[in-house]
Length: 144
Image (cartoon, rainbow, N blue to C red; front, side, top):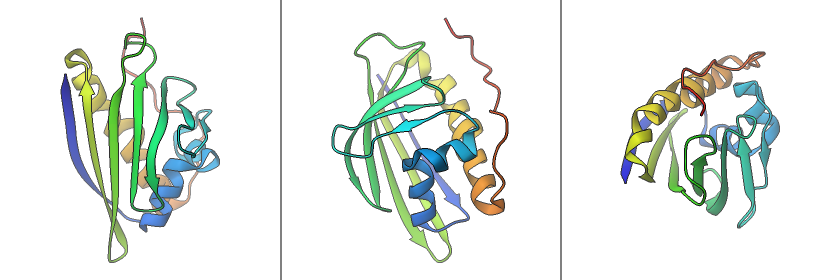
């Protein structure tokens, strides 16, 4: 199993970044895709129209988010990674640390590509401009 560890500086407050990643109505605005989020202990999340699913393990508003996370098209049944996000306010920006472990080796390149293309870049654009994404970012992976 592999891991991904990345840091991103987002031009928005940690409250705004956390809200965009944990409230369905906000998440849909920067992805352009249906989302279901139940932010409660053990609550489920279905992101990118069910492409990504998981459940929440731990969270602290605007500081930390830990969840079990999986790609529903390419991962085996019961195969989950653990995603740990930390949000640190630095002046008017947020340092978002993305640490994900337990990733199947075969999925690392795909996830690293999608992380910036489908999460970080659209999130940054939405939070800096307020512009809602009207069509989803196309996926380059082959869904099997």
